[in-house]
Amino acid sequence: MAWFAAPEYRLARELFLRLLALVYLCGFLAAARQFRALLGSRGLLPIPRFVARVPARRAPSLFHWHYSDRLYATVARTGAVLAAALLAGLANHVPLGAAMALWALLWALYLSIVNVGQTWYAFGWESLLLEAGALAVLLGNAGTAPPVLGMWLLRWLLFRVEFGAGLIKWRGDACWRNLTCLYHHHETQPMPGPLSWYFHHLPKPLHKAEAAANHFVQLVVPFGLFLPQPIASDAALLMIATQLWLIASGNFAWLNWLTVALACAALDTGTLRRVLPIAPDPHYPAQPVWYQTVVALYALLVLVRSWRPVRNLLSPRQQMNRSYDPLHLVNTYGAFGSVNRIRHEIVLEGTRDPEGRHGWREYGFHGKPGEPRRLPRQFAPYHLRLDWLMWFAAISPSYAHPWFLPLLARLLVNDPDTLRLLRHNPFPGTPPALVRARLYRYRFTTGPELRDTGAWWHRTPLRDFHHPVGLDELRRLLPAPAGARP
Image (cartoon, rainbow, N blue to C red; front, side, top):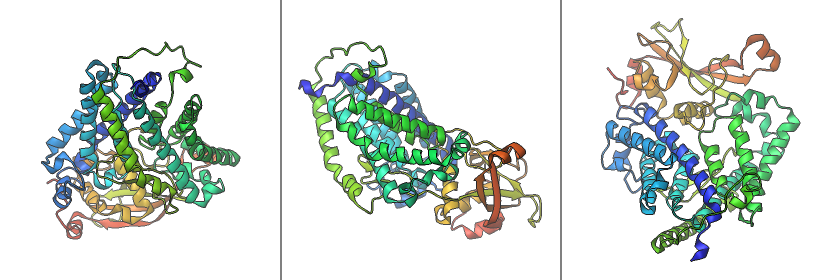
């Protein structure tokens, strides 16, 4: 079946696979660094408790067979090493079957983490990574031509990501329809980056142009992916340009980076030759029949399982991000169906005064806004999970259940795993006697305010998010021991 091979997508495949390996590497590194405090045996949401109440059929993971912190660390580190090896090109130096096995192992390891990750892994880009990772298994290596069906499946995934995000915006917040959402978004997004202040202060007509361009790229351009070349490549390049704008304007973990990777998969060498000196496409040996059969069967599976995501896209009650099976093979996507007009932030503080009358000091986070003079940092594609959940908790206390009180308990004993997730611990020796959570209204400063004060943020205290509390009281509030280390 000569039509099954698509040698003109050899560079597209390589770009996609290398970027995918980079995203996997970030995911596994974040898991290795953050799991003890978030999910470990003494974590805020311990995996052993989760697997005890959720059957394996609902959340397939090797941790249903056995869990220990050492095993989790081994899985995360193994995934990181394997992702780094694939990023360096390992798959191109082994036989086709071995290359597929390596990508499949990487997917299985990450699936095991996501399916026990609970709230900390309840993000659309986790499912996106797994769906893209499953497709990577089918793409072969440098010894075989890219399968045309596999490359089209990547376009179908990219279409759902972009079109789903466009529809959820158009159907959701009215500010997207009147082109004013970006008056607020750069300031109220989950984790601003070092350029977000500047994006926020762009002229309002340019913000409207941004919103209009976003609608065009997400609602019109995706259909170009299914048109002949060079139209499909031009559509992909427009998507890449939009994603690079988003990468510059904020921190959205690896959502934008993975979308760039998917868009790269639509670039054929004929289009790339317009700007790059690219050699003619090589002549590949015939693809093995077993390989073509596997790819064709998986394409059929995706076609069948696409019914529910398509129905969701067409529904006026569209859901933003959802997986329809525990393997996350074919999902639905979307982002920012609504935009906050006001930014609230939770600031954690502690004091050694048992009466709580004075001496309150602030804990510092790596990514989320805190000290007004601190310029937001760039972290994406790395994912700071606690920082993200603190943003959600500031929107509604329901997002803080059930991990927030255990977090306060860890601070009261200077738990080293928890403190490792923070940038600054104001009590490096003796832990505080009390901790509290204060809710603030944050806004970006104006240009004159920045020049006069050196502060990127202006903040106004609103109220207690949680009243001052000591360890004894928390032990009474929590249904089980706080899990603090002695």
